[in-house]
Image (cartoon, rainbow, N blue to C red; front, side, top):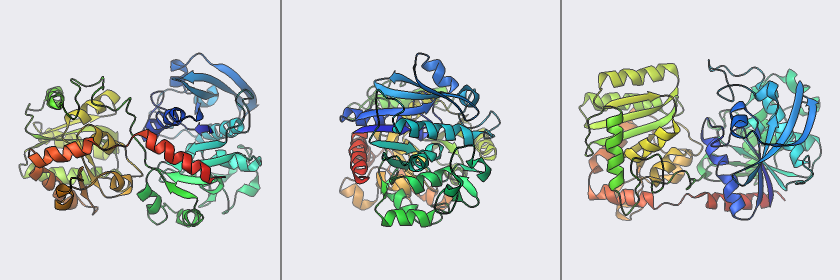
Length: 479
């Protein structure tokens, strides 16, 4: 099939979260299975610096300045770049300034991205022609299916929700600036809670909706997971137009046997490297070097959604009880939560270390070094870090929600006996439930059972080739 993906992030060019990892892998997996795949992305300053050589496809004086669509090859994938310096030539984060304030013109910035994606789907690049599928990702490209509908294009569209909590809400007055008719601003259209919602646009106008795990697809048909959109999603589900397709792991990037970031690579039949990586990380963070100490890590945004507050309570309790464990955090988010983790590290300098911010190389090193990776999310559409943990033999400890429920099997007596256990799962949203899961892990640590669980975890296959086949089936359903 001929497929055009529309996205605001693409690893390694621009990344703030899992969306970039998905688009850095899925198109390549689809191309490998024989599809003709291209991607459209804003020409951010960082992307311009990485890819200066491009070909101009088309240019328009619109949306407050010149918008030029450019084309280049990116690792064998055709990449369209939306070049609008007045909108995208900015330093740092693609969505907000250095003070974490959303750019006031995001409504136009991502309206332009959606418009360009739809225009390309309608044949803007005459050399490529029209794709059969426009696949839009998250609210930043949610208007693309709306433009297709407004222009009465026959091209089919799929819209993927990576996190329904981010909805792209703007004042209705911007509709005219986006060159969309006022007739679209209604409940049966773009309107949501008295505002213009990019996310709802994608949900309403796309021919098919996907989200990034089967369990999350079921959860978002009900409140509170639906964030107010349960009615529309229940309708789409009843129409057979809502699917859950698990994300995957890019084996070229996340593979302990070939990971260039590690102190020593390793694999299932030669695990010595994992201890070497653990020692190196303990030394790097000034923790006592002891490979027999249970080492936990969390790599995450520090928010309520991610359960960071639950983890703080549980760790405080465990450390006060004298639990023989170490914990290293890599993440950033709510300032109060950041400070609470720093305070914890100051109180227990031989057991807790904190790195505020994000570092791609460090994330690889931590996952390779740790024994457990913590993902105690209140909700989680799919989650990627638990998949990386499985791949690296770092057992995930997760809450039973969304993609976490779909990818991690709790190490209870039955699953240990039948050799299906791959980690530790708790259900109740509480620090007590999380503490109990930590106890469960600590009781198994260092045993032959632990080695068996780790082996089972590392044998799991969450390759993108599986997702590519599932998306192909989904695309077929739109016709």
